[in-house]
Image 1 (cartoon, rainbow, N blue to C red):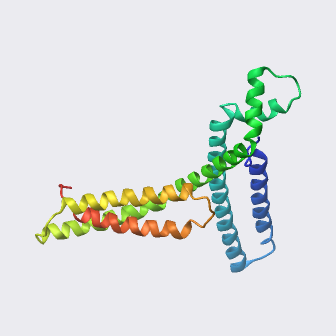
Image 2: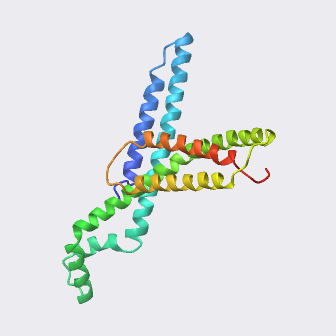
Image 3: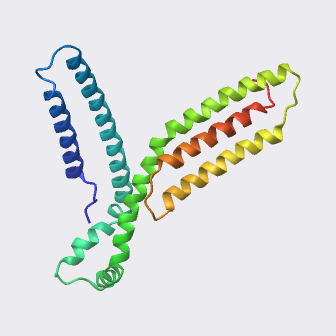
Length: 215
């Protein structure tokens, strides 16, 4: 079985993006003044966005195909389909393997598709990491400021609250990532991602506000 997201699909997607960009650039020829400059800036921004979208798409394709090759091509399961399709006589072990493969053919197809879907979702989580890191950093900076104010005001420290906030972050992010990777339904990740970033920023601020050791 050939991966769904192969080089032909990737090449076609890139040619489509380049064609749209060229069309956008050609569309502003003949204009002048502020309208010409504004249109050129819009097309340049559109081109950068499309190139970024292509890079993210390429990362998802590479991750999906890498998992597929690791689980099915390297192990030889992918080659069984073409080898067992040959009408040439097989040895007894190969005959047993062919009968087992044929009887579980639908399950193998589902497993191959699920592996690629898992790779796409894993790449999506990798793309979301910068936003979560930014949210955590903002909460950390604000928490350290609140910690300095608390120390100057003679406030109390709390290692218990610090550790609870830290472990709660790990638990919530791990649970959210596991649900996103394993749920057999399709949904938009943007709303859960923004909610996770807000919760992570709040818990990070709470965590570093009660940081006990010297910074």
